[in-house]
Length: 288
Ligand SMILES: *[C@@H]1O[C@H](CO)[C@@H](O)[C@H](O)[C@H]1NC(C)=O
Ligand SMILES: *[C@@H]1O[C@H](CO)[C@@H](O)[C@H](O)[C@H]1NC(C)=O
Ligand SMILES: *[C@@H]1O[C@H](CO)[C@@H](O)[C@H](O)[C@H]1NC(C)=O
Image 1 (cartoon, helix red, strand yellow):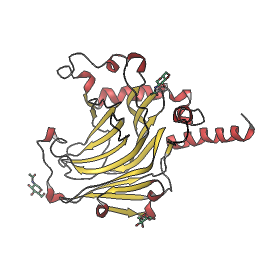
Image 2 (cartoon, rainbow, N blue to C red; image 1 turned 120 degrees about the vertical axis):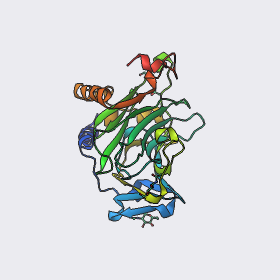
Image 3 (tube, rainbow, N blue to C red; image 1 turned 90 degrees about the horizontal axis):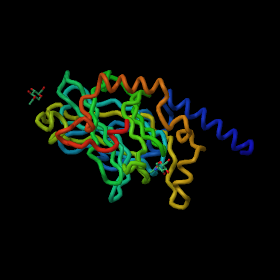
Image 4 (tube, helix red, strand yellow; image 1 turned 60 degrees about the horizontal axis):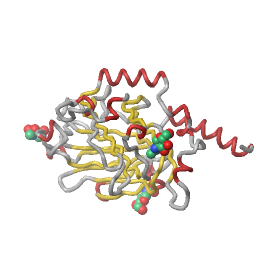
């Protein structure tokens, strides 16, 4: 490494550490994202540093990143619809839009006032999904902004809430489990999911509480942009990106104990433990 690239490398490291702990930014929405639907249900606040999506009986709304990515540490700060949000789904995910698609989901499932939100995560790889996990958060996600983050490198995918790992999906290709590798866009949306989201669809959206509003911040993107003209595998998995460094290939010991604590206290559903659904557990469930 020459001096310049060494300095660039160091500043990547530093940036990485800062971003892991901070999470706020001055990047405006328009620099990295486009609205995809429900244009008249989107409000730009604070010079585009905050976006509000609204849902009423006529529409919800959504946005997506301008670019696709092949690795990174993706995150949004979100404040969810408050009061009676039953049936309302707020989603933040990465998706490849392809035929056998890759997708990494945060889905926040609303609830009647006073009852907790459920945070559902899912992982699709090469078109295979059905890997739901659900938990209740240790705070009220409607009261304040919190950071929801997805680390994606070649060795692991980790979902974080405020830097606490809540889910780990390892690269288990050596035992035949496919692992996300396609370029993915970052998306967020607010929509009516009352046919499934709350109590399995039995608790419906109460439209007298509309509009439902979700707020988003933190539009800088820490990822390796997909470039059609270069060798993506080579470039996006390179250690020039801090999230690909070996220290991010598995949880460190503090993260591991925080993760175990979350699993012990807050998980309400895990497909790995659903034996009526999977009499033989999926292979990735056996190698935790
Ligand atoms: C972002 O772009 C939209 C559409 O071009 C425009 O209406 C809006 O004013 C822009 N917002 C900011 C904060 O620049
Ligand atoms: C999974 O890990 C193996 C071994 O490190 C690596 O060769 C492979 O490219 C990884 N797969 C993906 C899709 O990242
Ligand atoms: C919907 O909300 C209104 C206003 O709070 C309330 O009067 C009504 O009972 C609610 N309906 C249901 C089905 O909960």
